[in-house]
Length: 205
Image (cartoon, rainbow, N blue to C red; front, side, top):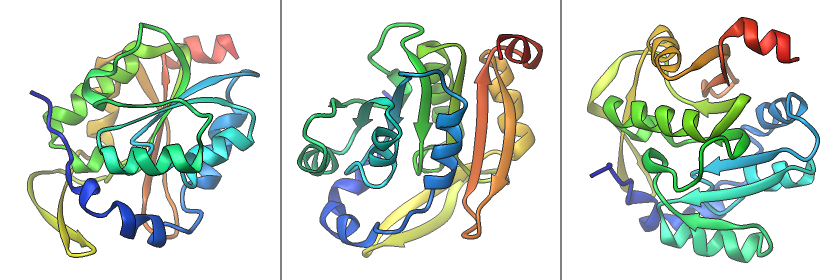
């Protein structure tokens, strides 16, 4: 059974008040520029839809949101009532192969043990179209013990990670390649991957 992050249901109301900055927005906008017109993007861990999903919609991208937290999805539907969003787990995405031009997983991967992160990458690779892009946030040092703990509104969260090279290897194992890695001023790590090998992606562009 895939690991479910239930903690966000406990902080949904607090998170709606606290997550008011624009962290991640520049990276999402850069992703959109690499997508074809009318692109369809999967927002994994869409939460309440702000600011990531809203940014995608403002850039004329067709978005489908998924989240495992029912209370976060309830707020998503209030904030973005015309945007489809379903309750699902990233490790077993309920979509057909090659459905999406792009996928975003902001604030998702690092909550999952390494084995579960691999399942997410495999699942995303399956639903991406050839040449599709995957943007996700994660750490850059090995941590699969769960000993790295943080708190949001008094709720305990555990954090996990591969190294950058570790993510590169996992991506390759599932038909993706790492295009870019960088950190923002808040030390959030952003990985941009593409489906297909680097030579194929350059030819398609």
